[in-house]
Length: 375
Image (tube, rainbow, N blue to C red; front, side, top):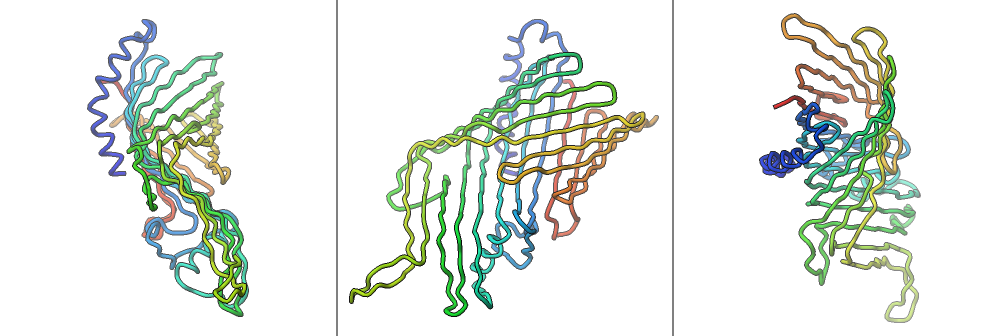
């Protein structure tokens, strides 16, 4: 998150110069509408199989994967924007990474990395997919009223990418206890701006990302609903290093005497062609109802490409205080993450914090601070 802060700090100083001339050119009816500034800082981290403190340390002692597919993600963002009428303009810096891996893959990785040997024959089906990028840039959004209580908002983000990595590994693995040996038949695909291989050519220092979003919101009486798609679009990086490889331990060959032998064989291809990848959409559904004066219940579902749905429940209560004014209190529970969240809103400020536990063994944490008001 510190890198995101450094990127956005310099951009924040240029925000007035970027946004105010643009707002001055808006149609007259929009210029007369209410204008609000918004600031948002958010960090959301989760790992099914390992504590957050152990990620990236090759420490498998606390590995406890869930049955089936396991999810790990990082979603962090720093945003400053100005909303006038139906238009929103802003600057942002963000970092996003998602890892989806089967339980078998994680157990196999722990065995191989630690040098352990199973006590009996074993088979695994390796299946792992990693997507990650980070960058900074600008955003624009436009909202239209479609009918009473119904609005549509379209948005776009243009990012200068400072980091882009994707990696997938698939295939069967067998361990033969009689000879204490692994047999692999794995397919690997990787692209990474930090990948290094022989005869590598110079490539662009940064990539470009164009990410789109759409949101449909509805409100009628005590009911509200929202459906949204985000982060669909394209990432492009000229000359980005890429590598395709196959690991097959049962490949046949001939020794010096002409006898057939089996030896590990890694076959691969390196490339640096201009690369453009389509980013899969992420979805969001929300349904809420006011159940009493000042109280609201909500259910939400977020979808992660390659994994599925992440449901959550929320409760909000509006409290009126003669000393400090109205305060909004909220409690939430994310079912997959097993994470409780506390939210507090007051005079345009909103603080949100959540975790599955409060010690070093935590596997899910979130923090968000936002402000909205006029200057």
